[in-house]
Amino acid sequence: MEFIDLKSQYQAARALIDQRIHDVLDHGQYIMGPEVGELEQRLARFTGARECITVSSGTEALIIALMALGIGADDEVITTPFSFIATAEAIVLVGARPVFVDVDATTCNIDPTLIEEKITARTRAILPVSLFGQPADMEEINAIATRHGLVVIEDAAQSFGASYRGKRSCNLSTIGCTSFFPSKPLGCYGDGGAIFTGDPELARAMREIRVHGQSRRYVHTRIGVGGRMDTLQCAVVLAKLERFEWELEQRTRLAARYDALLSGRLGRVSRAPDRHSAFAQYTVIVNERERVQAELMAAGIPTAVHYPVPIHRQPAYVHLATDPCPVACDLAEHVLSVPMGAYMSADQIDEVAFSLLRAARVELPGEPADALC
Ligand SMILES: *Cc1c(COP(=O)(O)O)cnc(C)c1O
Image (cartoon, rainbow, N blue to C red):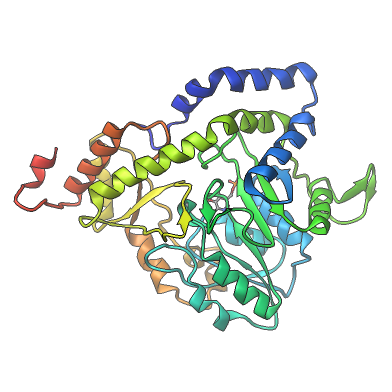
């Protein structure tokens, strides 16, 4: 069993992916070819955002967004410590300071009730992460930002395709940033990402920053980066978009099957009824995680830990920690992500769930754990 089965996805979409790739090889416009604009239009339509700017990765998306907002030295950005490192890394790379706010123990997303006490005169933005595919509490976060004159950047690297109160992730705040890293809900075959906004001025700034701050050929109006997504990767995403809605439905169906088999028996990341996760991960809460992982591995089931050390405890970031964030620390010791993907079968879900219950020593009433398998 694969943790995320990209090979089955390729086999299912092979004809279209190959065709799209060969179209690029034939026209030869490897940088900023026609697929780039086509993808940006398709993604804007999909999310409902007015503007989409493709970029070279999810990390670059965050950096370009922060640069366009003019966030830098002496500025503070409120974010979560329970995320992939890139969230905080982007803030540090533009010269600003991440201010970590603890997460909600049930959703693993930033706890909006703890944000306001961390706002200072230097705060410029709030950068929540829609972790594991589930949108953060964006309405509460947007309301806090409005009260204090801040902007909100959604790190939607794991949540492309998710929705929140009828709107798509990436279109829930001033700016949304996503990633097309192969294992994300919508992935390419290398590095890629996109930025979304409803603000045309910000969009123009981000398009310029993406190409070295260039407003016209060899006219550099601002400091930028080399941050384009290449045409081949855009072609791959265009091909994969054809199946994406079906894949989202399939992941939702498989997650519900996990829920039914595990609920009441094993802790898991909970999901609010007003939003749909993109299920980048299906994550449970276990004790004795190392042993559970080893037993699952012995049964041929790969797992992953997202994330074993919260960012404010990482060696390069620990000096920035002003809050102990105990919930994030506790989750980091207990979370375990199990195989998830649209191309898994119901039988595979059952196999993972039963092996997991057995490894976690969960007994069904009246049955020894062995009888589960
Ligand atoms: C993957 C990820 C990123 C970075 O995306 P890349 O495309 O790998 O640069 C940023 N934030 C989060 C939450 C992620 O999961």
